[in-house]
Image: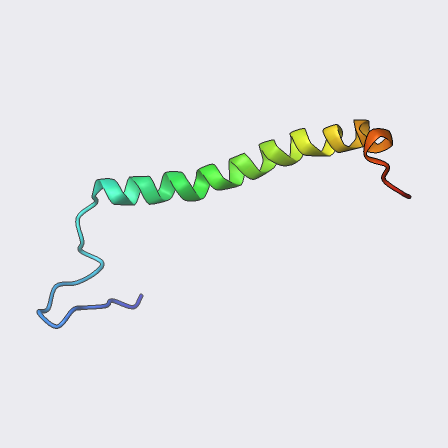
Length: 57
């Protein structure tokens, strides 16, 4: 495993867990969940609205 250290010798691996870490994890995982939700709504809606939107096949 690679360990990165700053100029003052503090290890990045030893950094304490902070609220920003939880916020970043929620944003990353929430984005994937939201993508699936949006595709699940937009896909059927476009299929239903094909005639009104005059899509060609």
